[in-house]
Image 1: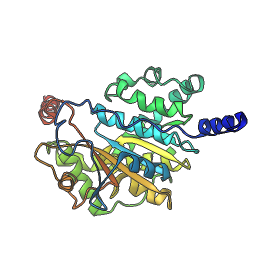
Image 2: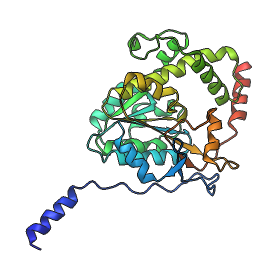
Image 3: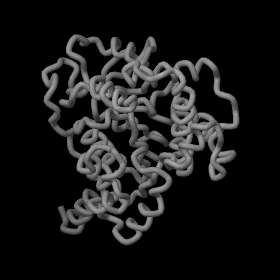
Image 4: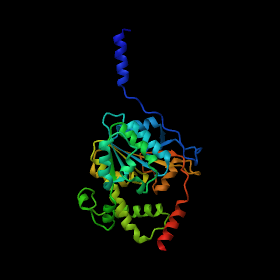
Length: 318
C-alpha cells in the first residue's frame, strides 16, 4: 500500500468518533448480587436490552430524561456515562439539571463564561453546599462530561421565590403563559400526584399540605420541560419521579415540544425479594413501569428515611 493511502486511512480513522467506555462498575454496597443488577428493562416490550442498544436509542432522541435516586452514586456514574455517549453526536445537547434553579442561573452562566471546561468550581459558584443536594462530587462527572463535549449547562428548576408563589396558587410573572399552569389540572392527575407525594413522605404529611405541594410539583415539572424545549436537543438530570412518562416532565413536553422524540430512562435500585422487573411497577402504582427503559442498580446505604422524616416532623410540632 502506498504511503499516501496509509495516511488517508489513518486520517479517516482519526476522524471517526471514539466510542465511550463500557458502563462503570457499581459501587453501592446493598444487593450487588441481585439478579437484576446491571440489567436494562424495556417495559413496552417486556424485554431486556444492552447498554449499547440503549445508548443508540438515546443518540437518536431529541430529548433524553435521566431519572435518578439522588443519593445513589451509581446512578450518577451511569448518567455521566450516558452524557459522554451523547456528546459523541454531531449536535451537542443542552444539559439541564433539576439541582440548579432559576435563581442560580446567572451565577452558573457567569462562571462558565470564564471557566467553560471546568466543572470543579461550579459548586462554589452556585453555593451548592447551601442547596441541600448530595455532595457535588457525585454530580461533577456529569457536568464535566458535558463541558468536555462542548455542551451548554442550564438551570431547570424553579427558584425558591417562584416556588412560594406557585404554592399559594399564583403564577410568577416571569412564567406567565409559559408553563401551562393557567389551565386547571386534571382531577385524576392531581389525586395521583397527591398519593405519590404522600407515599414519598412515608404517609406522614397532613392532608392540608398536599394541594400546595402538588402545585409546586406541577410547576417544577413544567419549568423543567420548558427549559428542555428551548433547545433542539436536550438532556435532563432529575429525580426519577420527574421523568415518568405517564405524567411529570414528559406530559408537559408533549404540549410544549410536540413531535419531539423523548426517551425516558430511570435508574432504579433493586429490592431483595423482587426479581421480576415488571413487579417494580407497583412502586409507581401502575400496571407497567412508566419509563421507556429502566436500568437496575444496587442500593445505596442510607439511614431509615421514614424514621428520619418522623423525627423531622416531630421537631416541627415542638
